Amino acid sequence: MFAIVGTLPFNEMGLKTGKATFEGGSLKIEDFEVMPNLGTGAMVASACVTCNALNLEPPYFITAGDIGDGKRSKELYQYVAGNLAMLDVRVLAIHYIMPDIPGIRSILNSLGERRGGMTLIADAGGMYAAKAAGLAQKIDIFTPDAGEMAYLADPRATHPAYVEHLLFELDSSEVVTLIKKAYESGNTPKILLVKGPIDYIVEDGEVVETIDEPSISAMEAIGGTGDSLTGILSALIYGGHEMVDACAKAARINRIAGKLAQPDPATSILDIIARIPDALKEVGLCA
Image (cartoon, rainbow, N blue to C red; front, side, top):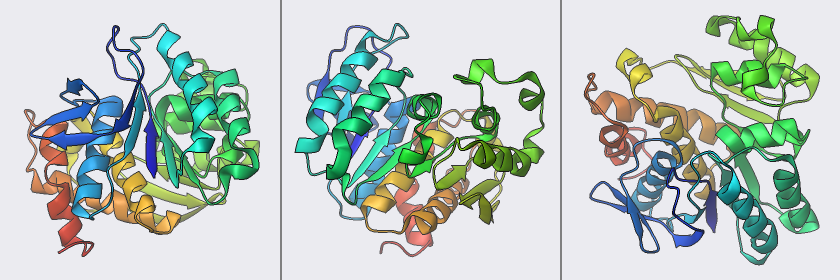
């Protein structure tokens, strides 16, 4: 099973679990339907499209509505900690969720020796929580952008808003410096996929590959492209791709999908997600 944990920005939506579907531009989970413009919704939609193109089971989505007070996020942490070990999960991706140190600890503690070959991926709030709890090395892959690398590189920051002033001012071109600082401080997992104008694939502190083509400058202004990348990556790992290879392939696929969408200022992330199957064909992953 491939499971995704993350909140959606709806105050009245309680806990929902089950196979996610994405059809006609709508993401469905149980009796709830949403147009996934950003965040967890875009990530899950991308994972659904990738899984469908690769003939894989769709992701199992564990979600709740949270608009910032953290109440539903706490419920998610509690549910996952109490139920994850009973599910046959091979890949777990934790996405937008209010960072909560006891919450992320409870999830990782609940796995214990039962984790087995499970791959853990953390982005956004899941990544912030793991780093703040000092548990980054318990995760397999983080998917930060260049700005979030400054947070990982600051050993004292417990949230990106509290990044050391000097690090916060570093230009994105100095991503490699931030990567080195982050690994020196122990605030990273084994593998990073650093998203940006150049995507950096990092293993054990060393940049093993960079992806900068196709270069579509218009994609930088489209919200949700980092989320779509994490969704593609998670699905590829679920499909059996080795982690570093999956990072490189996902970066290329996301960029190719952007190119195929022929983006302009009116392009939405849904336009790019719709081209993922074509991008998978272009890299030879499906017919």
